[in-house]
Length: 107
Picture (cartoon, rainbow, N blue to C red):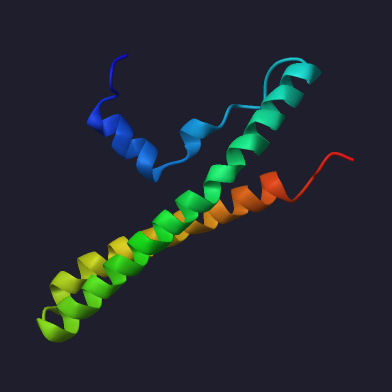
């Protein structure tokens, strides 16, 4: 078996889109199967949520150190920007997890 490239592993480490399938095509039964697959894969979303949360907090902590200890506010802006980029990914992972695991459960 061939090992995936490092760029593929890095992408899969940070982004969860590869876990899910598109539900917008196929017959009713195929769409139901895809929805079941997506609900099963949603168990990994808290991992991505925590991963992005920790990266964001880490960048924020580095920005604080750079700004106050090293007295370099221009350099700290880069770390603050990286920290703020983690917020949309964290919110997206949380919304997808709630939507797939807890909303619209079949009765």
